[in-house]
Image (cartoon, rainbow, N blue to C red; front, side):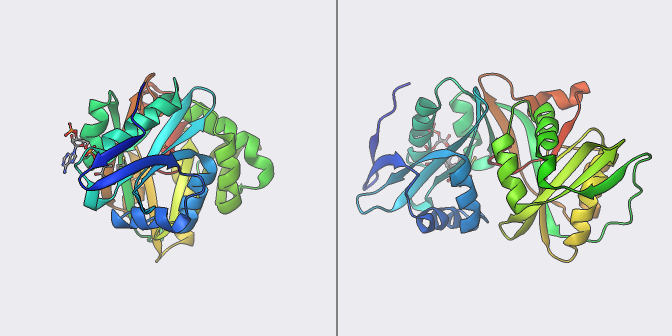
Length: 298
Ligand SMILES: CC(C)(COP(=O)(O)OP(=O)(O)OC[C@H]1O[C@@H](n2cnc3c(N)ncnc32)[C@H](O)[C@@H]1OP(=O)(O)O)[C@@H](O)C(=O)NCCC(=O)NCCS
């Protein structure tokens, strides 16, 4: 696909360049300008895990960003698509996305579309698949949850990585070993075991205004609740967030009871092959991604 490398918009002449090497403060300032909660550390992790492009004006201000995160050989998620409010609705979002599509090659894509971006992605050929419920608030100590029969809980350690990657791959559809290894560095993890084998897990790390729980991967709601509950208890009284595609059932009910009502929604969309996480949960496929690693990573 051909995509112009520079564009004149309003009174701005913008040039596209690599996001690597752009000062973190400039990226952080842009995400703050659209009300996003990312800290500089959250941007840092995104930059380590993905690639991206920025559009800068003649004096180096970053006015547009877009990133993509390759997982395995043929899939990537797209995220951090932002146009500075002073430049929105002039075609910059479409222009940067065309540049992304020209660079990701033939990879299948998944993304979390905000309301503001939904029409843009539709017009680029993305298909909507599932709603993501962004749940957040002041965590409330959950009523003591019964551990599912025959199961035990323990903290996750570095030696568990291979099993977490396996569970996550079965749920998500592609290998995210590099991401999970990096998340383990900054997360606390709880695993549910049966007969000494990890069957479900939940990670929790600092993000944005507080902490985020995710990914949560489990075979059934009770297991997902059991691994999420200790994170809620640990952050009782503090800001906690969890993004889930689960619309009904015990898990979203538990999340709501834990002081994390639905704050906003985004839509999981895909381009190319349908994205595993967006269709097969209903077909009885196990395990399931109960909570996203983040909207950018899916
Ligand atoms: C979403 C966003 C990146 C779009 O950037 P933009 O530079 O304004 O986009 P464009 O001007 O290229 O417009 C692209 C399409 O979006 C739609 N659009 C643009 N402005 C819109 C508005 N104010 N209301 C509704 N739709 C709008 C239009 O359908 C437009 O298509 P068109 O070219 O056929 O008219 C920008 O609004 C933004 O940064 N929002 C906050 C952060 C965010 O939500 N990012 C998306 C993450 S998935």
